[in-house]
Length: 123
View 1 (cartoon, helix red, strand yellow):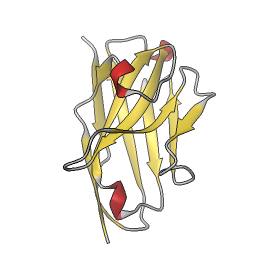
View 2 (tube, rainbow, N blue to C red):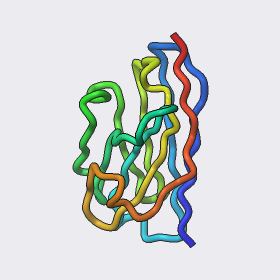
View 3 (tube, helix red, strand yellow):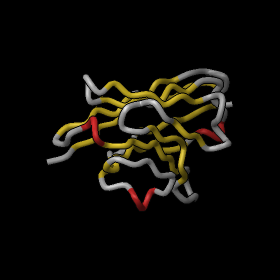
View 4 (cartoon, helix red, strand yellow):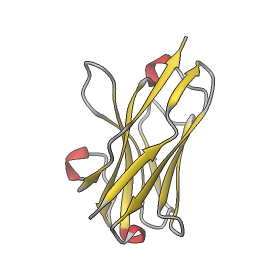
């Protein structure tokens, strides 16, 4: 069965960095586009970033552009989210998701989801 397992979340001060990882199993990882989404308390889930199957194309939400970087290693079945210059507004549960072949910024179009990892940024 398909599993996506996020790790790397935690508590960090504003301006700090974290690196999230999402390890995938039970699927042919190299043919899946991957996305990162987040949900803050009391808010709807929002798109953060996505990456195509080969890692050659990425797309970011305006709110994170220039601070967060998505990447993948198909030899390790893992997608990453490097988070720099973190702000308190980045506080949320971060989820990775997988979609066959093509990227999307709509969470409804992703087939598999991880359980999420908490990121808390203190001011």
